[in-house]
Each structure stands twice: as structure tokens, then as C-alpha cells.
Length: 460
Image (tube, rainbow, N blue to C red; front, side, top):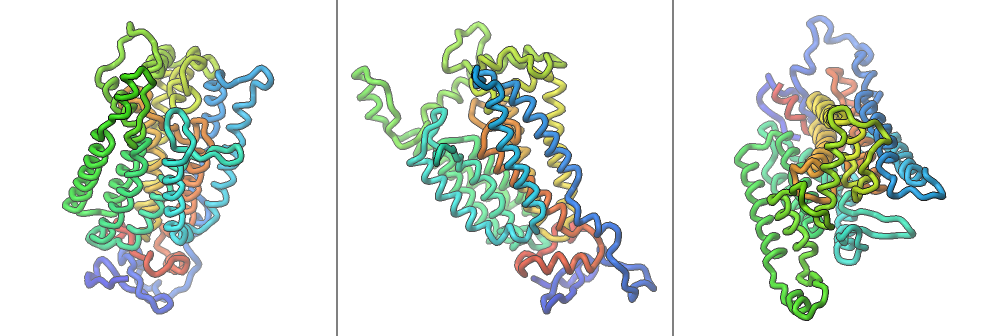
């Protein structure tokens, strides 16, 4: 840990022989009381309880998930058991709840120890699913094991967030993020993005957006941020060239012989992406005939129009049986149809409140690593929710992106539950008080290279 000369900003305290920077303002005591030993102040006791607001948002999302998933799953209901889709979904929600409880009781410092291993494993799974995985909804991005389907892209997003938080936490400086951390983070994001790009443009953009947000949280200099964005653009352009401009001679040969065209250029779903973007800019006219190309967009628009301002009430959806993937990629349409424009806005505010609450906790953290960790998880959840809403409402081109905690999907629910558990762990164990004893207790749980002061503490 570096020692800084500005005494008005940083004072040094030795713990187990290690010099640790503390906020001078945060450790001031009234004259005459400096020699008195007192127990931790009342704020410290609250640290051992996870944030009730995050818990409240999470539980409310679970309730919405159960209600709306049942409303949107009519196409999956069988005469034998009308509750089968809801039971399957509830099992995954229950598993997620157990993970949330377990992770909130685990000190956030442990997550850094497994961040690199978790990222490597997720990258291997991502590679395997891309080249040897099972195809679902036209994309080869899943692994089927013993009847269960694993979506490595969902796992990779959380793994990257944990790794980036660890890298940035080790390289936080009073002036911002160290240059070597910027290079490492950009390299990690580009490596994962190169694989995610093959089957999902939105996942790639989401990952880059999360990384840029984490840079901003660390107070990165604008010059470095511009370089990172430039690197992302250059690499994105190269991927576009490889994916969309490679000759497709085999396709044309097969098409000329009347054989169904097959993509053989190694670019995954390049043609699908091009067609989706083309249709997005062209738009959909209500008078257009319904076909496989525009079915999702048309029925999603019908569901939202049918919902009006106040909705038709849960379970009264008219389009849930006709809208493809109403229970997953387009569940926000059913939510609007059930609860109306008001319900959709309230749900969006609920996600944004989660981000705001995480931001408040991050701002008050004394250490940089927990601030990066909680904000990275919050940005991942909220960005994904906003992207889902943007796709459903026609702001973004059609793409598969689940609504966190609400859409059907075991991998997504479990991964997002882990993210909530990590956020609760930070809210429970990260020191946000002026008590020195609590600060020492927190530092004892962190390796020396993760003891950097939070940028908000340094600035204040």
C-alpha cells in the first residue's frame, strides 16, 4: 500500500506491520476523547446485517417473477399439470434464494481469491458451448448435462465482473485507476467479448458497458477511458470484418442447387444478426403479414397496446399463448399487458432503485474492492434488465436477453442470485463507519493488495 504525503487526506496506521491508508476525516475524534476506549459505535453493529433495501427489492422481484411467469407460461401448460412450469421455475428461485443467503454470510474478501479461477472456468465453458454446445433458439451457446441446460454466457458475465473488481481493487490510486489495470481489464473484456460476439451481440455490448461503468466508479482519467473505448471499437470492427465479410461460397453453391442455405463461414449467426438489424431500421407496419421474421415484434407490440395504462390484471394476458418466448425473452411484454404502462414503469424504477442503493453503499465503503464489487454486480443486473426492456419495447433490435429474476431460465436465475448475494455480503461486511476497530477488523479479512482506499473516501 502506498503512503501519501498529503496529511489532510491520508493518515497511516500500522496493522500487523502493514501501513494502511485511512481517511483523516473519517478518523477524527473530538479533543479529550482520543484516549478513551469505547465499544464500536452503533453504526458498526448495523454492519453485521445485510442491507434491508436490497433484500426487499430482491424478494419483491421474486414475487413478481412467480406471478408473471405463471401468467406468461400458458403455451407450456399441459393438461396433466397446469402448474408444472411454475413449479420448475420456483425450484430455481428456491435454489437462488439459498445461494443468496449463503453468499451474504460469506465475507466479500473471499470472492477475490476465486475470481481468476471462476473466470478461467467460465471462459472454457464459453469456448466449449460456442463450438460444441447444443443449439437453442437458433444459437449454439448451451451445454446439456444430465437433462439440465447450462448457459455459459450468463456465467461468464458474473465471472468477468468479479475478476474486474479484483483487478481494479488492486490498482486503485488516489488519482484514479493505474494504467496497468486499464490494460488488464480491457484485455479480459476483449477476450470474452470475442467469444460472446459469435452468438450474442447484446451480451458483448453489455459486458463492455459494465466494464466502462466500473472504470468510471474508480475515477479513471478521461484520456485512459477514451483509449479503452477506442480499443473496444477497433476490436469490434475487426470482429465485424471477420464475421460478416468472410466469403460464403458454400452457401451460394447450395442455394443455386435448391438446397436450404446453411451458414458455413464460421461466423455463427451473422446472417441472423444482419437481418435483425435491417428489420429494426425498417420497422414493422401493422398491416404487414405475420411471419417467422416479425412474429415476436408484432405480438409483443400487441401485448403492450392491449395493456394500456393500467393493464388487464395478472393472468388476463391475451397474447401469452401467441407470443414466442413470452415466458423468457419477451416476458416484459406480458408484464405490461397485465399491469399496464404504470406497472412497467414501476418495475423499471425498482431495478434502478437497486442500482441507486448499491451506489450509496459503494460511496460509503472505505475500501475500493467492495465498492467495485457491489457496483459491478448492480450494474450487471440493471443493465441487463434495461436491455431486455429496450428490446421488448422496440428501442433495440431483437435479441435474446432474459429479464433478471423474472424470465424463465435456470442459469440466469442462479447467476443473478449469486450477484445479489455478493451485493448483500458487501453491505454486511464492508466498513462504512468511522470506527477504527471495525476498520481493523475489515482489513484483517483482506489481503494486502486489496486494501486500497475507496476513491470516494480519498476525495472526501
